[in-house]
Length: 263
Image (cartoon, rainbow, N blue to C red; front, side, top):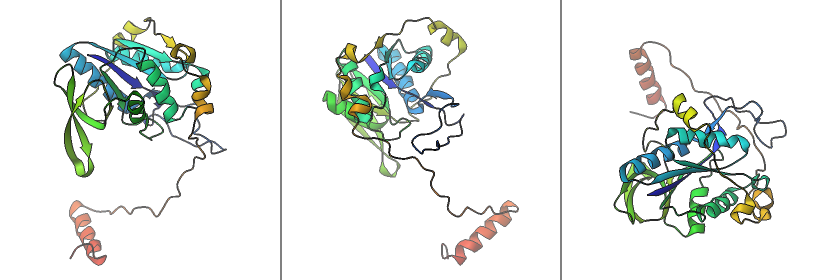
């Protein structure tokens, strides 16, 4: 099975204190630590496990600047077979549709059975997977937390839905899936793996290579633009009850009764 996984380089929220710049137009990015998007990491791990079980190859692709190459190499060190870097000044400022347009052009250059994205990236909109599927006219499932390969023409996928429930669907290949965290446990990437792929050549495709008109993507083609960033006003803080466990429980029950929460 030929699998393509879309990955993205994003600020690592566990390593950074995110602050908004003075103009409110973006976050402060000068000193940020970056890493692969968490959801995308689960997608790569799932692709590797599928390949190991049924054969084929895993290719990771990213749209980003020069520094985004490090994300591709990390995922190749994790076990992906190939990487593709989609790099062009024309891609900067793309919205969800712009990114999907770029990725569609790359997908059509290959022959992939399965295309995986993370459920969402740093903008949190969760749009690219669905848009990409629509542009390709492929079946699509979001929030996927289970994949079972039936044969070379179809798979079964589990989806997380409202109320903590799970649904199972059978989907024809090729298809696009957006992967939810928790579908697996991404493997550790060691220094040996990173050194192994350090000198591997990664193809770079620009707008011209993909047959994309520069004005159709990037800031020029974006229909959605960031208007403002702001920090929500803080409401009244929570109160921490002090004392032993029994004292805290007793006080909590007392307050809940006073407020009519319990009788």
